[in-house]
Image (cartoon, rainbow, N blue to C red; front, side, top):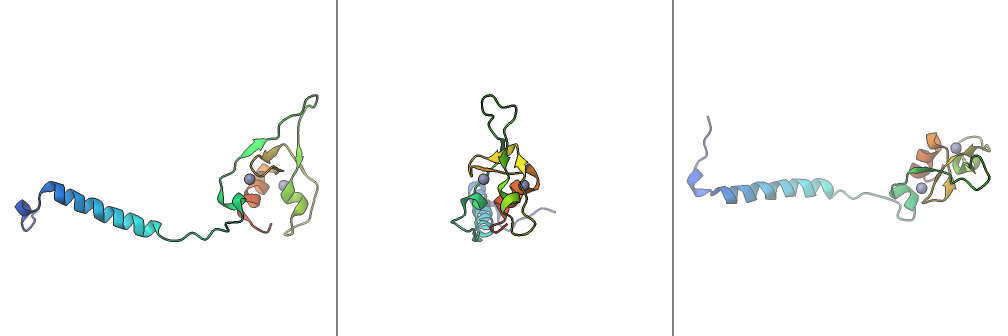
Length: 108
Ligand SMILES: [Zn+2]
Ligand SMILES: [Zn+2]
């Protein structure tokens, strides 16, 4: 059964606005949660994507040393050349897993 108490007293437009208002309230209350980002670490907050290291003239392939592999404190440092890099950060990175680590872990 479908009934409202006084349907004639609630014009559709007003009802519609009320629904929108409630939706906006619900939406803004979930969006209001502050996100705690380290503002000084752009690489962790911005979206970066792996790109091929640009090839230099006369070279068959271009690689850069992976920054995570060579500077990690979590594991054993190793020299690792990768043909991928992050252009925004201007560092060489293995696509997996170093690209993700570099952009998600502040102290890798
Ligand atoms: Zn690496
Ligand atoms: Zn980056």
